[in-house]
Image 1 (tube, rainbow, N blue to C red):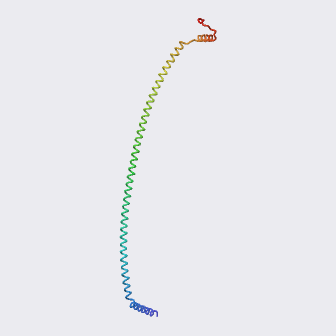
Image 2: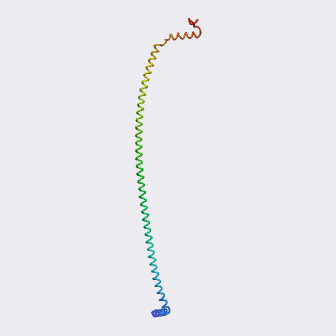
Image 3: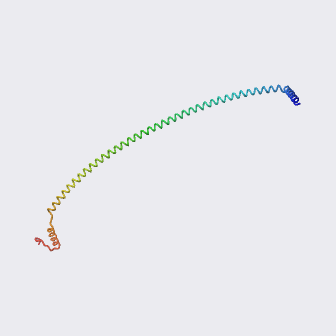
Length: 182
């Protein structure tokens, strides 16, 4: 029974399809043709759009690559310039240090020579002064010895000095008269 029903259902479906085909067949085929044309046109537009987008992406990628290469080149040049500037500065610094070291060494040597010369002059002056002082001391010693010898020769004795003092005391008192004063 179920087979009969299935067969009858199939026949009824076919009949409905035939009726539908008779009533709407032309319109359906027209719709289908339009759908196929629309689908083909959409696919063509989509392909054109995809190709246009790919072309634009390729152009954009090319521009970006060019800009990236340009920036990379500029960066490499800047790095090279900076490196050269640092190297030049380093060379100048080393040369300046050498020059300063040489000048300082020369100044130190000149100062040492000047100091040695001044020390030598001072030692010579001290030796001359020492000799002059010894000579002066010797002359003063001789003069003092002569003066001492003269004083010893010309000195007044104790008794003469006592008599002189006694006479002076008497004169001051007024007790001593000079023989020719009256």
